[in-house]
Length: 299
Image (cartoon, rainbow, N blue to C red; front, top):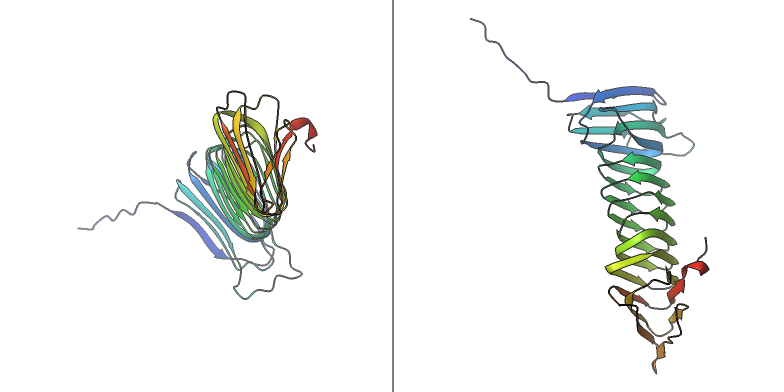
């Protein structure tokens, strides 16, 4: 009597050697709310949400690519362009890929020198990048970015946001109400509609924050040098506390309150505005820090 052996098909995996600059065109069914994980060392990658319950990859691979991985288990899809470990990247083209994923996907991206565009993702995004430029638009749920260098442009982000950059500039026009941003040698510009909780720290760079602080909301801004300014409108209702170390300077263009200067030349300023039902705390070591009205913001 013959035995029937049934092997369930759990994982669809394409993992094969490739030739330099090969064109790829692969697709597979995927969960409408699954995870899509992308690894690409260099080049240009765009990841776009669409209405199909499929993940589709099209474009050309890195000139140095030795293997292309496209594996899916419906709930998770992994896309990876593998390069030789001892590669010299000079004078060679990187990957140029367009990846379409279900709208509800969560996207995880890891890159080194990849310029990345992400658009219309409803399940959240996590990005780890070394030196590529990042453009992210239309992301709901959480957005997490760790970047060493490269420009970062954000639009229409509605979930909580956590971002860290070492030497890249940030331009964010978002609807997120909770943000946490840290920078080193970075210029940070954030324009929020409403602020529930904003925590921003920067070393050796300028910071501009704009947004309406809601009742119970908190703004925390700290810097080591550079200029750190919170732009507000006439409806601010908050307890405001600003301080500097010796050598720092407080800027207050909101009202007539003046900072107190200590014998060691540190400065401190506190005042209440309106019902004082939210709080603003700002500090700097050696830069300028303070509050200005929105009409004086650089647009």
